[in-house]
Image (cartoon, each protein chain N blue to C red):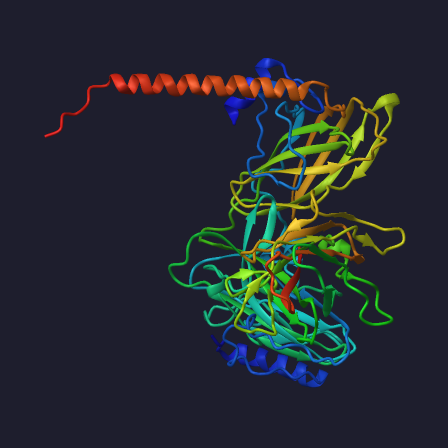
Length: 263
Length: 345
């Protein structure tokens, strides 16, 4: 990679945008492990005019928030759970814990049923989830009420199909239990995710090239990434399923996991 | 694995008393060998949503001021030691819900922290037990569950990654055609370092700052970062543009998404900017942060559209590189063929 960069620089070629600066030729790329969902970095890279690293070894300040006897339980007031605090030397009990005083949770909401309807062999079936109950907001939702000042309100959503009989796919027909026929590729498009705060806040990013293929290995794929997005963020995804021409008629099912983690 | 000891008994009693006071039924932990595969369905006759919340409750004293430690289990432990952070689970549905709590493997690749497929473990997941693998909650009820991470002797040194999942599975329903059974999970990430001698350093370097305007997309500013420390970093930050045309300024902007890098990995933090942003030049002031570690960098950038013909140049150069590679291979083979061959016996 380094040799390739040198070749491009020697040719004077410019890709995409330009970065000005005094040390452009001395800067090498570092995107070998980069995020494929992001735009590629041109091979002519920019300057690093100034860079102020923090003091060596100083990256945190320790402020114990509570002290008590080893592995003890203390009450923290009405409405809050008991806290486990302080250290323990016995080796049996968890050590060095303190109570984090914060409210709220990171919530997920998904419809508990999603029927894609019926399709013709040789076609692709596409569907959005319908609102299963009056009074609920449509679609999928993440609600972050943990407090942006404490946590940053960053979170990601990934999805995967669970593996059944060797592959993550729609399996059926359920009317013929011994058949175990797998339908074709399944793709997921989160659509536009919208923060419901007024005005909307945060940055919510979907896949660079939707829809994304859900691997037949069952591996999870990140479909949304949010930074500084407290409150409710909702989206209405689209699921696409390829129905092979040879698919036997009947009912097919798959289990879709929607996973949210605090980032 | 059960937790023993006087204080632990007191803690368990406290949790049980809390649960009883809240009217929560927490079944025993013994009959739950593989929670995810056997996650019981939540009851519910009418169609509705799966809706619940989770948060981490306990944070190590040593990480008390680190915002990352408020939302993920982040610690460094010597072998033979243990921690016991708790998580809070809140059922937000108008009906009762059943939740499975279990550890899962995770990996950091391509800038993302991704939980592994269901049923896949790693070294870390073998060290984790949860006090209540199944939690039943009434409408609006909440409960605490304790996670114990016990690092065994002989554990591999370095940082390990996993997720403590809380999972709810929708009940199976009669359906026709093509239907999806829904599962929802909320995870608390685990970044656990194993080793002695203090905390490994957290450090990342900003390697370059590049402006680009790939048609027809919005202008982008791409910051290349290397994680040169001993712990994973979750990178976010801000971009401010100053000294623009007419002394204009713009920002602050947040990155498109958080980028997670394991030690030794590199990646790009991308800022997507308004389409109306003038070409510049601008002074880009970038601040990236992971927890309490902050790095800043500054560069002068332009957001120019792609240069016409650059693709042609690229193709020509690629062709030239291929020719050079072929010449090198041919030369190598020629040299190799002139070497004296070892005579067969």
